[in-house]
Length: 225
Image 1 (cartoon, one colour):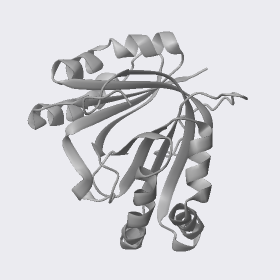
Image 2: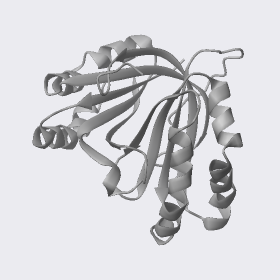
Image 3: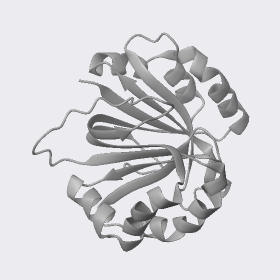
């Protein structure tokens, strides 16, 4: 069963962080048990434009063969380098429950349903915007994110992406699957955005996965979500 880790690091020094972003991808190649990895910028998930970007928070999403491989990666040189240069770290360890769509042409998440799972869950969305449809997408965002940040059961919401423009994503942490479902299907703005996705042709590629949260370690903004 695959294991997914999301690390988020808070760092006061931006230039060294940019250097780690530039070299990290190559450094991760060939890591035993690593199936998929993305170094990500983060933001507030409020406009999905460059205004959201937080140059003092950076993330690494990894998918591993098993927990032993994930533990080794957590102690590996890429994670250690980030840890050394950071003042804060959050790690969320997860197991995929459902997954659909593609990320960079592949489906990285091996979903294994867990009937009866009643613990916390996370949701990861990622989309590659069509440049000609970006303005329409950004106009639709405000009411959706207002509903997201006000949703019952939400513990954390971050914007994540490989680039400030065009590659949009979110990571959200929730109290339960029921809370995710309530937001997704009862929030009017979110329902409208879902209905408009196909007619508006916003995305050239999109992915959604829901994950069981196995462990949360560390803090973000001084708090453990």
